[in-house]
Image 1: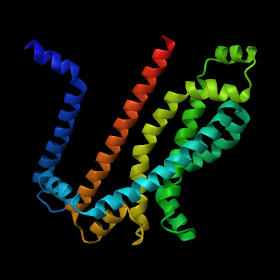
Image 2 (image 1 turned 60 degrees about the vertical axis):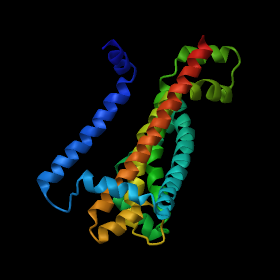
Image 3 (image 1 turned 90 degrees about the horizontal axis):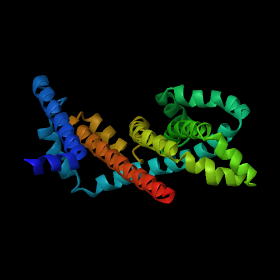
Length: 261
């Protein structure tokens, strides 16, 4: 009995997460049984289809297309978010000037931006720009918050030691804002994936490769089992990305604690 308790304590998070996932599938099954419609197929239909999809090479190409655009948007949004966030964190005047832009990026309807970009540019570019506009404000605010929370006494001590602006940024502001950057990435990647797929669906471009295109094709023939299977793939991908970021964050935090010792 004690061994079981010890195992539960050791793997408590994994066990409870697994039970939570099982609960989601159980609830999905119950709702599908109650609904009794082909518009909401249950997991007993979608899960087998989910596994058969991976026998087709097109699904890997579609995943690669969506993830490639997402990665490009994340890199651009993170890089510019860090640059502008540092400027905004260090300059209250710039922060006040740039605030209206951030508010617009956050509040303008995503669908409206997609249609505007599609009208002005190539439909294949729309998902990249849309996801960038979602991720950039999140990273920007994360950096500004991180800079604001840096202990001012550390900055003053570094200046007394002769530290210049660039050294302050790379040795103090960025390292101490690391947790805020990671939190911003965790918050933005899942949202970015959803927006990327939605923009691919709304773009409806036959030449665009991605999960959104597959969902769009399935929606034209009302194949709800395929739509849910493709959605399940997207959920699992984001879950795996979140797990990787979680372990990277944990490893980085452990590295910092070891250095302190």
